[in-house]
Length: 198
Image (cartoon, rainbow, N blue to C red; front, side, top):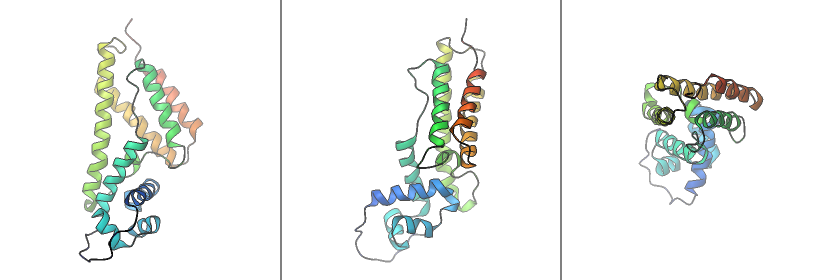
C-alpha cells in the first residue's frame, strides 16, 4: 500500500477505533488476507484516508500487532513455581486462542508465509516471537538456578519446544480446535516438563 500525496478533508474519524477494527481484520484474515478493501470496510475509511492516517498497510499492521500484544499478550507468571507457570501459560493459550474476539494468535499465525513485498510486516511478528522466546529462555534459566529444572536441561531447546507448542496450538485453533482439545495439549505438555532437582 503506497502513500498517497492527495490532500483531502481533515481527519474527523477516531484513529484509535479505526486501529482496533483493523486489528480484528488482520487477526481474522492474516496480513496477506487483509486486503485494503477489507480494511476500508472495517474502518469506514477511504483508501486515501487510510494512507494519510497510517502511512501504509505494513505500518498499520505494525500498530495492530503492538495493540494486540498490549491487550492480549501474556507470558508465564514469574511468581509461580516453574512447572505450574508453564502449565498455566499453556492453558491460558488454549483458552485465549479459542475465545472470541479472535481465533488463534495474531503473532503466531498472522504472517507465517508472505512475499518479499511484506518483509517489514514479517519482521514485526518475527521480532515479537523472538522476544517471547527470549522470555521463555530467561524463565527456564531462572528455574535452573532455583533448582526447579535440572542444570543439564537444554534450556534453549525447552524454550523452543514450548514456543512451538504455542504456535501449533494457534494453528489448531485456526483450524477449529476448541478449548477441550487444546487444554489436553497443555496438560500433556506439563507431564513432559523436566522434574525438579531432588
